[in-house]
Image 1 (cartoon, helix red, strand yellow):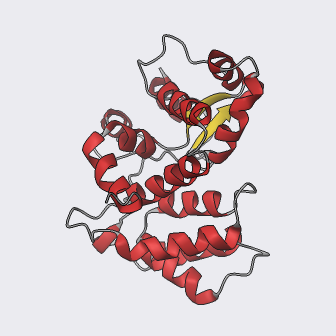
Image 2: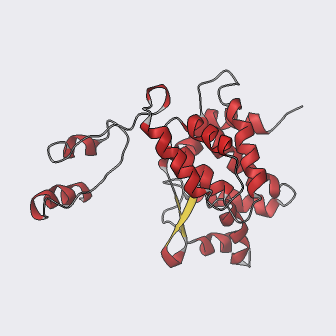
Length: 231
């Protein structure tokens, strides 16, 4: 229905109106909208153009504005992102989180960058970043089983099919505790990957790549081995 509405707008709205729609290649919307749209490819990885790193560099400079970040580190982050804007955006959200230490988190992101691909598997920049975020939250609550249960519940709630109906964050908290607000700590720790809808605070993923990561058990195991050292 949404794509049909967009198609109808192409004939009903003035030609000066422009809509930017981003998606992965090969999805149904690409075929449905190709007659009324102009396709622009955002290259990543080895195919990235010179323009994308410049744009990402500006994104980091704006995102870290007012913070003490060496220019060489911003350039390293932009080069490493290789056109992957979701990686850059998530790093900014994670490092700037008021519930964490800016310098410590930035240092860990920089330290983990060379580790991508070091395990012998495919390059998984966004997976390593998601693993770092989850490990940060879980490690902080490692001695509190109730908090770990809340973390599991929030992550499970965003996976389609696990719940018959999406529940607000407070309702999720009430399932495990007489104090629903106890779940707020977990929610705050996951703000870089999970957002909330309106005043009901219903958790939702910020980007589908996070859901893809959670649903790929082997990928999660491979990534978390980087953070969890088993003797």
